[in-house]
Image (tube, rainbow, N blue to C red; front, side):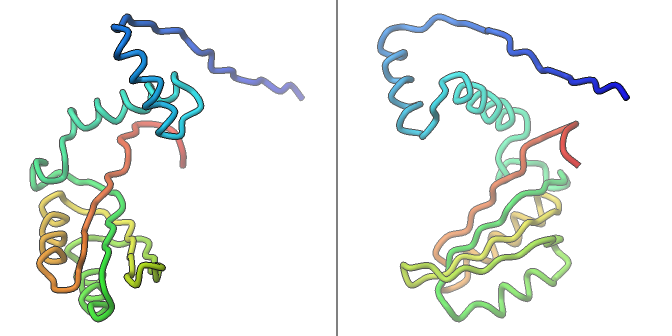
Length: 148
């Protein structure tokens, strides 16, 4: 039996910057918790390009299909509203988690799939609900190959 191992080779890409930017970049990489400047620049570039290509959830065409994590910070008393939204059919929730935080509030995370318009509608419903502190949506990265 023969085993073939595929190795992805790195490729060096360089660019010039002024000294101030270089110093600021080093500080930003370090304060962001990255131990590797190349990985930081790769991740930042991918995030920036994706944002330009796809836009934010607020600016996406209402029929664009999107998936990601819906995060809701709230005070006790709105659990039924969250339950109703999860089961409304407006968005598809494939995973759900509730956490009681040390700051006397709660956070629910929902892995959600739907159209940008429906996700915006759900977010607006939550944002206008009393005792909801913050609603955020983190879109999943765009991928055309990879896992699963």
